[in-house]
Length: 334
Ligand SMILES: Nc1nc2c(ncn2[C@@H]2O[C@H](COP(=O)(O)OP(=O)(O)O)[C@@H](O)[C@H]2O)c(=O)[nH]1
Ligand SMILES: [Mg+2]
Image 1 (cartoon, rainbow, N blue to C red):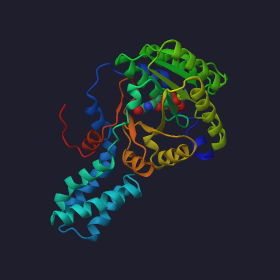
Image 2: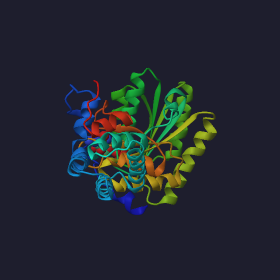
Image 3: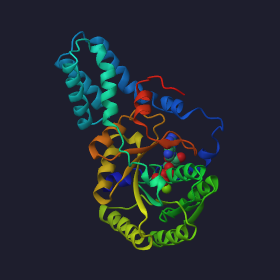
Image 4: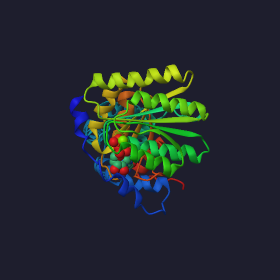
């Protein structure tokens, strides 16, 4: 894990706060921002697909091979690509389709099928829960905690956030800013404190306040897998012991712009933690948005939220239909 861990570490340490402050208050709807954010991904995948759909006159092996290449180059991953194309072949056969152009909608439907999230995906939002936010440095954990706090607060939930990233100087200050912005209570955030004791205090506070959701921001700077496993194990044991019966959610935050590296990180984390969902950040302006499909397919863990910017309302539940519609520029009602 060493390399992946080190890679993002020094990224983005200073500029966070200033960038967040200067965003214009007037915002377009989320779907519009998603469509805009996915422009590069769309250019990367869809224009290639369109040229295959219109360039081929019959559906043959070459046609499927071209599609396969584009999907894999578009970061959808081998497994998802194969499943999508198998599904497409079945439909072409069943429906006796001869014209490649007719395959476009079938392909879109197949990709949507790959992405459906189970019904229990957001159960933690309704339960008394602890949400652990994990991931390597710089992927957007703290930002995601802040955005989620804002979202849940706006829904009238009582939220406490725990600053268990005590490793990095200023991590606590950054989280404090988010706590203030979203109007929620924060525990911890002192440099060098023991993350376990921060979680311990945060659980006590959440219980005392009868909080609905405790969001725990963690450090990404753990130099090896064993270290990480120990740290997360310790945090989990404290939660189990001190907060019996609470609903536990563990979200891995991944930076979509890192493409296949994000997938590798997700795999590493799934070895050390019981991951229940993925948050895919920086979907704005990446050509690698196809990674959302790959991650879900390879890990069988749903992408639950996506981030399309740096401000508090730039995070939403991942909606497979909206995502694929945005990707393929299918018009959506809004
Ligand atoms: N464009 C964009 N930037 C993001 C998004 N999420 C986080 N960031 C930025 O990524 C940088 C690192 O985020 P941070 O939350 O500090 O990452 P952490 O180290 O995992 O806690 C910051 O500059 C954030 O503003 C997103 O969805 N889109
Ligand atoms: Mg952080």
